[in-house]
Amino acid sequence: MAYAPPNASLGRLGTIVNLIDQATPINKEITKPPKIFVTLPGGQIFFDTGLELDTDGWPDGPDGDPSWQRNTSLRYADNSPIDSNRVPYYVLPQPKPWYANRGVSLGDYAAVIFKDKLAFAVFADLGPTKKLGEGSIELMRRLGEERMKPNGTVRNVGMGPRVLTIVFPGSGAGAHRAGQAKLLSSINQTAKPLFTTLGGNAS
Image (tube, rainbow, N blue to C red; front, side, top):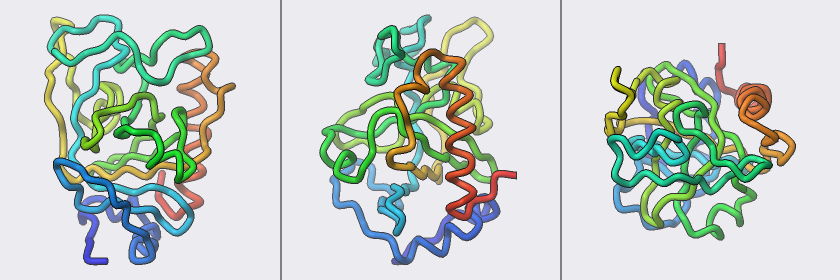
């Protein structure tokens, strides 16, 4: 497979780079084609894209984002949305079958890499059918890009390119979503060992 990860991310990827040549392409039409969009041998979904901003669930919206929505596809046990400004989350495109057939559900975790920065995130929102590469305010923050202005409004600007996402199918559990504190704790506790076991470098 003619794909080379960005040099700045190789230290984070570790031996995951050795799995890419064995990956299976995902045949889904995306408007801005990713550099790679595959299933790794262990079933993880891997893609290399830019990262656009998703502010859904942020209670102070729609300050700066005309596409803001109050709710997210994933909800807490009390049916409240996941706050984009507090929780690192990623987005996958609809419809459900393409990711469900690969064992992925809302609430599953991912490792996201930009250059040498690493963040873990939860699958919390569904995006347009042909759009791949969206993340929350907090995810961008953890990857080194702040989108909140001092006045409390948001800069609706994406980041990247060359943002790498590795989704771990079946990694989320309903119990982790009792509330925000529990979810934040679970994201790191669950995703980090999955990433390191796959061959990534989280230190």
